Length: 235
Ligand SMILES: *[C@@H]1O[C@H](CO)[C@@H](O)[C@H](O)[C@H]1NC(C)=O
Ligand SMILES: *[C@@H]1O[C@H](CO)[C@@H](O)[C@H](O)[C@H]1NC(C)=O
Ligand SMILES: *[C@@H]1O[C@H](CO)[C@@H](O)[C@H](O)[C@H]1NC(C)=O
Ligand SMILES: *[C@@H]1O[C@H](CO)[C@@H](O)[C@H](O)[C@H]1NC(C)=O
Image (cartoon, rainbow, N blue to C red; front, side, top):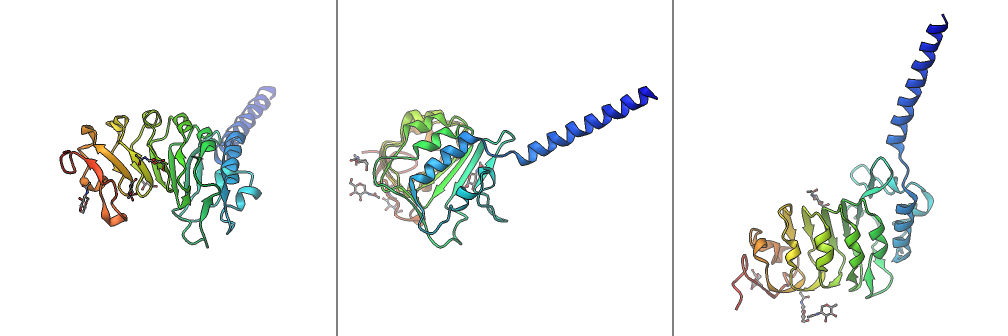
């Protein structure tokens, strides 16, 4: 009898443990450091139409702005942010979100989201700010879409740190040469048209179609000073 009671107690304990484990995995609330980093990013943005208003009212950054087709953020089971998508999917919202200041450096605070695997920022216009070299801390970033009018070079040390599979940087104001650090066998999709890149395309990138560098269907093709395969040979 005593033994049977102990057995039942053990079973109940086991069930509670399983239930709690399941519960925490499902409802992992956003890690405080990641939330602070995102709120810092928001403080650098002008949001005249309140597109990001639930960032202030919902403490769980893992569930900010979700619709049936769209998730702004996703998190891992520890509540660390693994993806951030802003711009695309917000088309139904009344107006855009802007970076408050022109020039300077873009998105320094996002470098604290060190578990980011995917970052997709569009229409968060930067006004010609530079890509932050602190983004080298994003050592899990494999999928990056940036269409925010960042300017200046694509910093080689940052590109080197990213385990890139998918990189779309169309329609920014980036210039200088395409860094050889883009030479990664994991890179499957590349789009850099509509920028102001110049010089010779690293030969490892000749496997991509010309439209990766010079696609006039997505806006001005730009990159007038770019040469070498798959574009025309350099002079
Ligand atoms: C990367 O993100 C883009 C845009 O959000 C998506 O279309 C694409 O399928 C993703 N690619 C990979 C390899 O995850
Ligand atoms: C590259 O862009 C930066 C930032 O807009 C600008 O200051 C610089 O003059 C440009 N460099 C070239 C060679 O056009
Ligand atoms: C590239 O830069 C040149 C000179 O710096 C400028 O005249 C031109 O408009 C730029 N092109 C694009 C597509 O940004
Ligand atoms: C890009 O494509 C356009 C139209 O296809 C062409 O006129 C232009 O010379 C090309 N530019 C480069 C740098 O290849």
